[in-house]
Amino acid sequence: MLAFCTSGAVVGVNSFPIRVEVDVSPGLPGFHIVGLPDGAVRESRERVRAAIKNCGYSFPSQKITVNLAPADMKKDGAGLDLPIAAAILSASKVVKQEALDRKVLAGELSLDGSVRSIRGTLPLALGCRQWDGVSLLIPADNGPEAAVVDIPIYAINHLSQLVEFLRGKLDISPLPYSGDEYWSETVADMDEQLDWSDVAGQESVKRAMEIAAAGGHNLLMSGSPGAGKTMLARRLPGILPSMTFQEALETSAIHSVAGLLKPEHPLVTQRPFCAPHHSISDAGMIGGGQNPRPGQVSLAHNGVLFLDEFPEFRRNVLEALRQPLEDGKVTISRVSSTITYPARFMLIAAQNPCPCGYLGDDKRECVCSVAQIARYRDRISGPLSDRIDMQVHVPAVPYGELSQNSGRESSAQVRKRVEAARQIQAMRFVHLERAAIRCNAQMGAREIEAFCTLGQEERVFLETSAEKLGMSARVYHKIIKVARTIADLEQEPSINRYHLAEAMQYRGLDRENRLL
Image 1: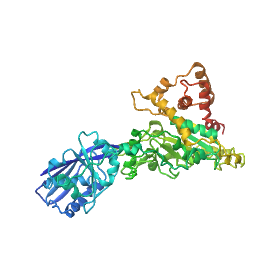
Image 2: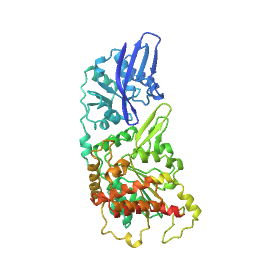
Image 3: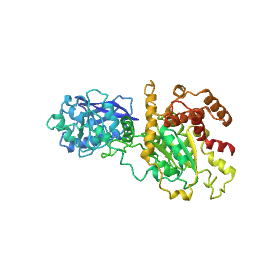
Image 4: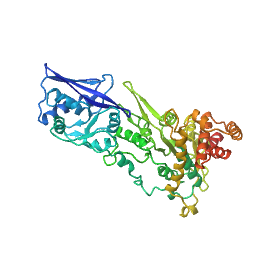
């Protein structure tokens, strides 16, 4: 007897339909799974057999062959337990084949028949939305996560419940669509203590961070210990514009694949802030493993990746950032497959100016030699430094400013200006034919030529400065993009000379490094 049903596989953050075919035929009793199953899928034989028996159904004492099509795609995880069990029960005539039509099943089985949660339910639901007329049957624990997608979602707690539902003896209502509900929730859950007004002084650094937030630019801060670098970085998400619903779905899909979504918060509505320790491996940063999982650069998609003690990270970890910083995605290649994860994030890095940390400090003397300082700064390669749009020095705050509480702007006040600049950028890029560009930092050469036209005076000024400072072509273009953001904050339609002059000030560390 031949039976089949549909499940899904998640590769990266994209899902693909998997046809689960089961043949129960006379012969020596056996249970074989083909179609490139990994260890977890092969072990499903024991889970499925025990679950079917412990639910009171007869397990066929014949030759059982399970084919997972397409056969050339590797299948991993325990999410195929439920569809394999359902197809076997259909082949045994416990349920009718017609009951499995136009349904996608996914879930892990316990030995008693309980259905356990799985990773990647949200990408699977997003994929099902493109498979016309398909409903999704998933573990109850994954229900809230999948219900943010507007398709019929059925939450299953037990294998016997699934059988009764397929037989028509049990009525299960589809979960109500909750995408609008979660999206309409305000982002007021953010810790109120992390407000822009908590930072005393540092007006020049605050200005640089506002520009970075308005244009999505990468930023490197260099300053003595205790100057406020980490404090400023942790408050950056509070001035970033709220995510769009599409951005929330993209970010939530990555967190779903990583198994980080919680039933009470099935949709990521706040921009991520990832701050890995400097001992992280390249696989932890970029993603990977035997069964590749998203790394920190992907978990920070549409948000902020904060690297404190920047030069202390391993060289191979830092160099691995070059591709995602340039392309907005990371590709992980294995013998069996190649997986691509989104990785469009703002890089905020913080470092000391020298090994002891007090180079240029007014109160403490630096004890490092020129050679030590040069070696310390050489840990950040030139190609990586080129990919950081803005570099600022963070001076120590005078004691008199620490006690002054009046006149400080709140995160909400700064965010209004940032959102106004982002709205200008959204209108600018709305008619682009190529992949969506959401902020100035994502512009390529074609967009720079179209939207960042310079007057004769501005062009001569920039070219002369670039020649004197020895800028690379990448830095040249980044200065233009930062200047475009400064003009947007001032709601100026064109880039003026003083916009370019301010943008060039944010490359000060390049000049310092050349003097060593």
